[in-house]
Length: 269
Image 1: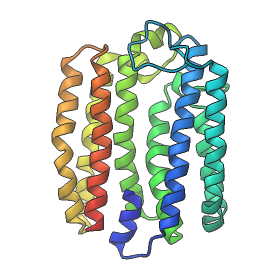
Image 2: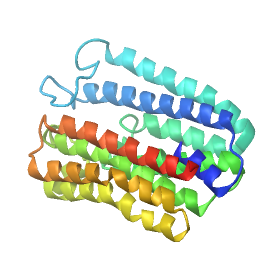
Image 3: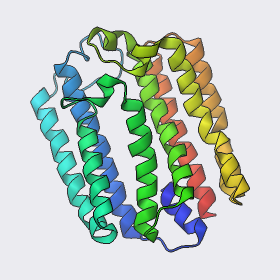
Image 4: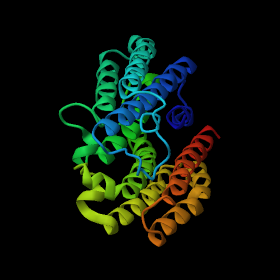
C-alpha cells in the first residue's frame, strides 16, 4: 500500500492489478512462513506445553506437524500462482524476487540453514518484508528502482522487525534450550531491549528524508504513530520477558500497521 502510494506521490501511473496480486502473494507468503515455522518449531522442541506465546495449532494438537507443513506448502504454491501476472509485467527480476521470497519463507525455520535458528531472522524480515516488498511493488509499477522506494522499504521493514524482536525476547529462555540462537539468545535481554527501541524509532528519524525531499505531508502525518512507539519501548524496558509480551506483540503489529497506513495516506494526499 505504501509503495503504491509513493508511485502516486511521484506523479506516475500505478496499476491496481499489480497491487491486488502483490497483496495476495505477500499474504500467502506470510501465512506460509508462519505455518512452516509452527510445524518446524514443534518438531525441534521449541514449542512445548510450556510455551508462553499465543497458542499454535501444532503445539495445541489441533493439526499434526505434517498437516501444518502441507498447508504451508499450499500457501507457497498459491503465492507462486499469484506471482505469474507480476512476472508477466515485471520480467525475470520479479521471478528472482518471488523465488527468493518463497525459499526464504521456507528457510526461516526449516532446511539445513534455518535463518531463525542462526540469528538471521531479523535481517530476513527487514530485507523481505520491507526493502524487497516495497521496492518490488514500485518497480512493477514504473519499471525502475528508486532511492525513495529504498528509504520507504527500510522504514516498513524496521517496524515489521519489531514484532520478531519482541517475540524472540519473550521466548529467549525456551529458545536457548533448543539451541535456537536468535539475537536475544546470542546477546541477551539488554541488547534486545535496545534493539526493539531502535527498530521502533529509526523509521521516524528517517522521516527527515521525506521532509528534505519535499514530501512533508507523509513526514508529518506518520509522526502521529510516535506515541505508540514510545509506549512499546517503555513496556519492554519495564517488563521482564514473559506472557505480558503477547500484548506488546499486538502493540507492535499496531505500530507497523498505523505507521505504514499514515505514510500511505500522506503520499496519496
